[in-house]
Length: 97
Image 1 (cartoon, rainbow, N blue to C red):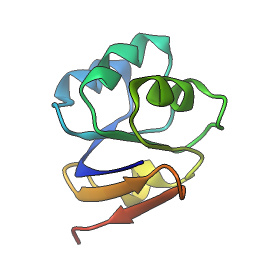
Image 2: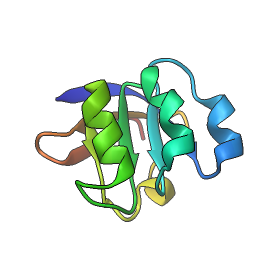
Image 3: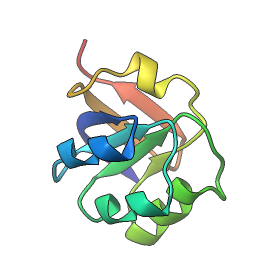
Image 4: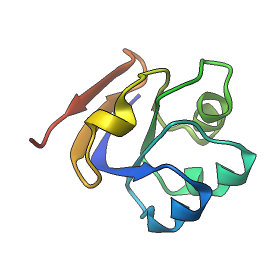
């Protein structure tokens, strides 16, 4: 599927508290401790990982789009920037400059 919303850059577990409902999580990777945040995000963009990695599997279970292995998401996308994620096509569009 596809989702659009503000990007929330999260590099550590401690930063998860800044994620708001409707955000799109942008991270290097996730682990099981991050799972609760998937209940209120609209999508996820991950720098490293594959289709069998934690973020991809959890996103599928929550029915939200995920694009993984983008390499530079956390460095090219700015916190709060509006983005569109298409999990079917594996694309991420930055909508705000």
